[in-house]
Structure formats: C-alpha cells, structure tokens
Length: 78
Length: 418
Image (tube, rainbow over all chains, first blue to last red; front, side):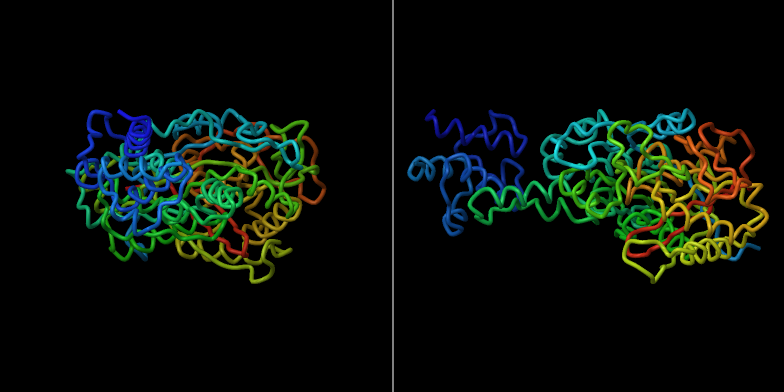
C-alpha cells in the first residue's frame, strides 16, 4: 500500500469510527462505511488538511469511495 | 379541585463540578464542597480571573462512541449524560412510553462555546480560508442538546430549547409544565447544560466585570451575601428533570419525588445586564409563580436564590424576597448553592431545582458556603443558611434564576401528597 493510501485509510478509520479491515478500495463512504452527507464533507476537509491541497467542490463530489480518494490524492498531493 | 392537572417529577440527572450524578452532587451540596479550582484546560496567565467550577473526570465515551462524540460539543455530551441518568432514574424504557407523547425542552445559555471558539481560531489562523467543519453549526446551536436527546430516546413529542441566558433552564421547566398541563405530552425532559469555560467566555464575562477575581483563593470566591463578594464564578454542568403528568406517572407506577406546583416568567425591562435595583422583575416573577401554584408565601419553607455573588444582584433579589414574603421571611431558609457549584448559566435552574427537590425529600437545606463577614445591607433576621446545612422539614421550595437581558424565571416545588 502506498504511503498516501495508508494516510487516507487512517483518516477514514479515525473519522468514521470503522474497522481498518472495512476500509477497502471499493468501499463507498456512504453505502459501506456509514457516512452521512456531513461526514463526507468532513472527510474531504481532512484530506485537504493532511495533504495540504485544496479539492474543488466539483472534484470532491466525484470522490465517493476509498479507492477514488487514494487515486485523486496520489495524482494531486504535493 | 386544583386549577390545573398535576405535574410531578419522576427522574433527575446531574453533572456538576462537585459530582457527576445526582447523588454525588447532593452529597457535595450538603457537605458544603466548593467545585472551584484553577482552570487547567488553557493558559489563563493573562486573564484577570484564573479559576472556575469545571466538571471533572467526564469521559463522553462512557456514554457515546468516539464517532458520535466528535460531532457533539462538550455541552451536548453533558446533556446526553444527564439525560441517561434521568431516564434510567425515572424507569422510562422504550417499552413503557409512547414516543409521540415524550418531549424534551432543553436549554443552554450560550451553546457550543468551545466549538465556536475553536472553529473561529482555525479560520483566523489558516490564511482565512473558510474551511468550517460541517459539524460546526450542529455543534454550537443551543437547541441541539434537545435534538440529541430526542434522537437517543426516540422522543417525538414537543422538542425545543428556550434561551434566557442564566434563567434558561428555569424557563425550560416552566414551558414543560405548561405543555404538560395542556396535555401535549405524557412527560417532558426539562433542563439545561453549559460547558463553556474557554478563553472567549472568560474574557467576555471578565470585561463585563462580572467575575470574581479572587485568584489567591478560588474555593472561597463564590460568596453570596458576604460583605466582600466580588462577582460570580463560572460554572459548568448539566441538569435535567423528568416532568410527568401525574396520571401517567401513577398509571406506570413511577416513583414520585415532588410536585412542580407552579412556574412563572417576567422581565425587568430595565437594563441588559444590571438587575432592577429594587428587584421589581424578581418580585413580580415570584408572585406570579406562587399565584400559578395557588400557594401563599407562608407555604414556602426554602428559597434557593439566584444569588450569584455579585454586589448588586444579591441585594436586589433579597429586596424582592422581602417584598414577597414580608414577615414570613424569618421562617424560611434562603441559600445560594452557587456558592458551591459556581454559576452554571443555562444549567443553573435545573441543577437548583434538583437541590430544592432533594431538600424536600431529605429534609435538609443545603448551605450558602463561604460566609466570612456580614454585609450590613442585609437584615439580620434573614436566615441565609450560612456555611452549614440545616435540618428541617421543607414543605415547598421556590427557586429563582435571572438572566442577562433582564429575564426572570421561577419555579416552585412541593412535597408530593397523593
């Protein structure tokens, strides 16, 4: 697992209060990990903070699974 | 026949600087324990006041999981803890109540002060990029305690907060009483919570000259009716009471602590923060409360005062009590339990209501601690229950709370006689 993937998964475990094993690449924040719309906004904010980037809203809306978050951050993190 | 349907108290919950449940709180009160101590949650070295009555050893994870805890300001976490105690105490379990007939009227004087400050600091220190947590608003609004309690217990009846600063939870009980008399619910959890000791709160109250600055001796700083009182001490806590229609309580065989005989509300219409010098609003609210309860002043044995330990406030309230009670004042006990708990703002009314109910049940009046020097402004025939609790029969107890804005709210509890 890449360093970015590890950090992303740690944030998700922490913020959503889920087990690490549940945080698979295919897992959807809302359908599989119990996030509501507010949790999802918070996750994006935490990614921005952790990786020191700004994720535009239209991009944020396309990040709905763990794998999508990792891919996006691997492409954009500084 | 009574004027209205009778409303009783069947459950109580409390967290304070002197105990994290009703029993510990009551033991603290009758043992004259001060909850004041130096603030250790932030650096107070540049503040004029460096102490408060803070809740101690509170772990929200004893009540809610970590994910949930993050979404609740500490004031709402305290609210949940107090509600858990009150619901269990009342024996209310999902199978023995109708969710549509259970309500919550729960207040906070200020709301999520800690979260508000934290988010604003974040904004100010991150190049002012507006990155506010999606939980910011639902953490700070002062009705969210009522919302969380309703979600936790599936209570779908009347649900809201009433806000009148330091009178808030007295108003909450008054509103609960009125709703129940009108048969809008079978029971309503009423109370308030405050956990806002932070830089912004301390700085704000301090610049109003409202706080005691007795930094060399915090435990004696809250000294209502003492000649050398010099301001209130910020307190934290949550108090909640289960108000229930008597018919519903009897039907389910609930234990009844006391009857909420009446309540009232008024305004000074005088100044945003200073009390009316003659205590006119305070007098009016006590009279209307007694009238609501269909009781005369001579039926009251104990008055738990607002008594915050400010020079003007204590004086105005006592003038009002003298006006209302006349000659009977020599027969009653007066005490300010804020001498021990500090001023818990929006939680004060509910916590002091619990003190009144316990005094009726246990036949003990909790003291006004920290009395050192008589203030010649007060008549010597007034019994302020200084320094030591007093054992006596309490038939009925009245509790005042007043809030910035000139709000006054009052409740009267009496012994439950079937």
